[in-house]
Length: 190
Image 1 (spheres, helix red, strand yellow):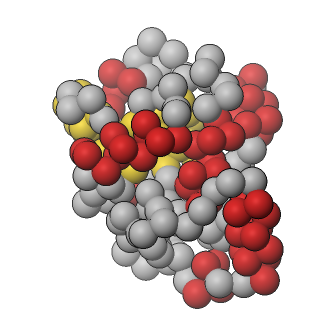
Image 2 (cartoon, rainbow, N blue to C red):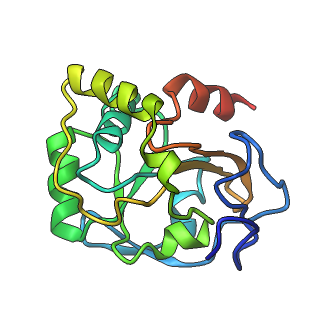
């Protein structure tokens, strides 16, 4: 997939401004594997209430660790993380992060592609801003680990309504651009 345009799901690529969403876009009709080993329809995760679907970078990424760590203090938000690790790697990542939220196992990045999340470019991964943010994340106890998944994969966050409509999205402009919990809370109020 190129870095401009939309994929077959109709979801926009990483160049859209954070918070931009095409209100006519729906979540894909697909099955997902949870960290518990259970395979469920994605729709079952948002059928009863709004879902915050958080796509992480690779499991060794200090910004992915930081994102999960920050959101673990919001156990009442209906959040599901998407990981590129296999089942065992995702379980270990979730356990080490002490996250109360479930995780989807997506080592082939099929769900990433379905939501139009592409691979980053050099300037999105290597810039003074990402290095400065990385230093700050390290000071807060988040260390870089071995990449588990594609280290060029860009993260993003999507709010899915019970009818399957994507009502809000946040596409990170660089690898250190994590959505803040306050932004998610505000999006859930709209």
